[in-house]
Length: 589
Image (cartoon, rainbow, N blue to C red; front, side, top):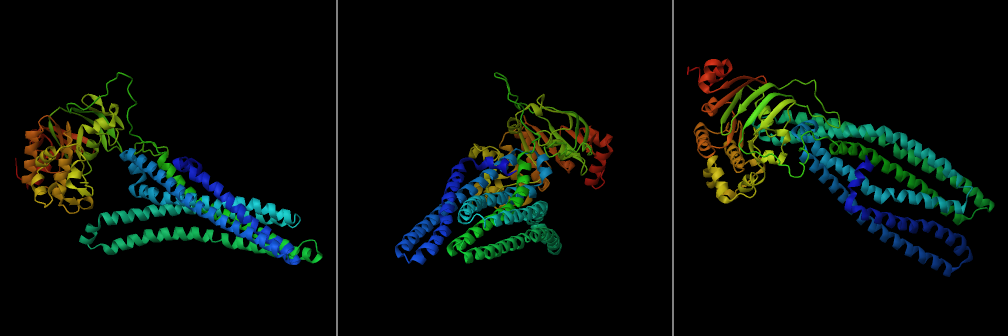
């Protein structure tokens, strides 16, 4: 996993290479210190050679200053490399998410994707940072310290051959056991982020229903679950330090015991023993560094798996391969829509991670109908009857399980996605506005629209008047998600944003539910007057919104219950008549 992600180091590779050289020089300077100190103790001090002590001491000062310089540069370059590495991965993840279909988003969940883009990437960033600062240092320290230790006393160095394997084996089993715990911890973090996100988005509903206590309890449960997972991983990792300290101290005592005997018999100098102990400490410290960094690797590997899962996910809705030279790509020109034997179920998209729902229940079954260019079509039905699912298939927000959806006689899967969606204006059930000005939000429909085009779309959506009532007009700054607007105002801005596209097909998914009947009538009147050539598809819970439509489609449990004009459906369709009579208070047509 780490190797797979290392490809994203990109332009920051030069910093990684620089860190390797800087750390090499830093370690060499530092490893010379015990060797030079032994010379002072065994040569300079017994012979009272002040000049020798001064020369060696001066060299030690120079080496210390050089080591500091190399270390500072290493810290700077490692920070640049790790931050850039994380930025590249975040960019790749974000780009991948932008290519996702709704099915992909449904599979991963928004909260989990946020965690992967933030916390999981941070774990990978920390791993690289610590690798460049510490992990590179450890093998260099180990090799050079072993060399100097063996050059001092080869026989005493045999103790290392016992201590290092014992330390490595102990740490290996602890770390391998921790990997599963780290993976569980990241999953608990997903749940925690999801709860926080949901609460903050719906905070007004929480306060309106005085449900703060319930939300606190719900947060406590997921927070406690995350805490338990983190503690369980921490308990296991806490075993590392006692094991390392035990082996370190036992080895030091052993070296002092046997080294002391050698000093007493004259086979080893006092300075050599001091230097040897220093190198033993360096060897065991470098092994401990390996162990601590591998703990970071264990957690980083769990995060890397989650990141790679997103990067390698198969996007189920993709553009058709490029046409051969001279071929003409289809485009939306008239707005004719046709459904042929369409079946659809959610979770139908196959991912590299095995996401599939072949056994799931169809939410749409045997859907066949035509919408001619320029028609106004209403779609009505009970909650869960498949209305939103139906219209989501036209701009390929989802793909059919079987059958065909055609626009202007061409299967939507044969269109370039950008071309298809450019010809379709859609106002989704949830009114999504972004932080920024009203003008910036409307320009989402067409970033090159003129002020006249913006105002025309706003007038058709009956939004121009309330916009001009704001002191800053179209330059009024909206709060997050349009918090400073009413529900009806947000819906009208969303409609205006779709109209700026000048689409051949306009889809309104219950997008006037928060608008009063009089304003809704004005919106429909403007559509009839100014959008005569556009095909308009309206999903509504109110029959008054679609009563005058050229055609009304009645859905029931994912199937078409009836198609026709208002009068015909009232006479022949029980479901339609029940909806109408209920809304009219039982009055007869």
